Length: 117
Image (cartoon, rainbow, N blue to C red):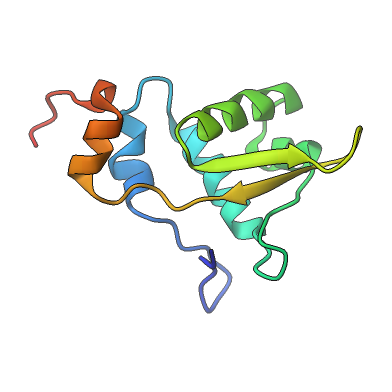
């Protein structure tokens, strides 16, 4: 999942802020963590592996908050993560968002709301 651009920026699928932010409990912090993990993704290994303290520093939040945000990203299918060994850092598998609006709303009917669509 290479979303790195040709310069010092990271490409982010529009669906992150056009669709996923409609989900209850999903906000800008979730989008930011997704962007951070995308920017840290290593194509050679197939995952990102920043430690939680580093993510917390980038997001200006507590490491426990990183865990809660990560759990929501996993719940909605945008990432998966695991620890390779006890006490080790998490590795994060960044996934593509659902891009088809119809499929997204079928998967997440709670995201339907009257926003002029």
